[in-house]
Amino acid sequence: MNEQVQTIDYGYAATSADQRNRVLRNTYWLLALSLLPTVLGAWLGVATGITRGLTGGIGLIVFLGGAFGFMYAIEKTKNSAAGVPVLLGFTFFMGLMLSRMIAMILGFKNGPSLIMTAFGGTAGVFFVMASLATVIKRDISGMGKWLFAGAMVILVGGIINVFVGSSLGMMVISTLAIAVFSAFMLFDLKRIIDGGETNYISATLALYLDILNVFQSLLALLGIVGGDD
Image (cartoon, rainbow, N blue to C red; front, side, top):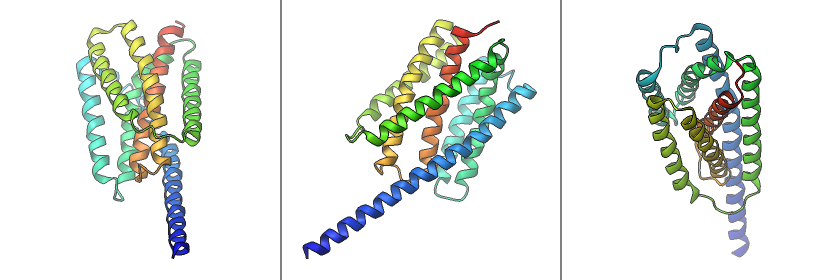
């Protein structure tokens, strides 16, 4: 009887581990794929200047409306065949929205190097957080509410700064965003590894937003501090 119970328990653990590995593997593949529409959207935005007029309140409304609209649609379709195309549409939209900042950075003499530095820094943060997520054994789910509160502070501060236009405010918000979303990266990766997230589309969305926010914040900081006219 005990042997049977142990066999069942070990079999369940193996299946559970297989499922977690499958979710993590699919998440990494979809995350890599999602970067392609982002690059395409950013390139299109820079090349055509289609987002150049989205400044101030208008830009904020378009960004928030589009972002939350897409995230709602992703949540509704994450268990269907439409989930992946909707997610990729969202990443294309985010690339378009990012194109204004990229175009501004490219206006600097050292613009391309700043973009590559931000990209390399973001990749480095992801590598460190992915490594930590595999070695940390303790439960870090309690971080979630604090990270969410930090994200709300950043969101509100960012909205206010759209109208204030303070470079110092942008530096503070960007620094805080790098810290919060780097920690969010660890939190989201640990959830996947521990089996707390079983839908790879939702997992990809969470990690994509973490990565995008770290990259955008690094780029903003580098543009303010290291931009060469």
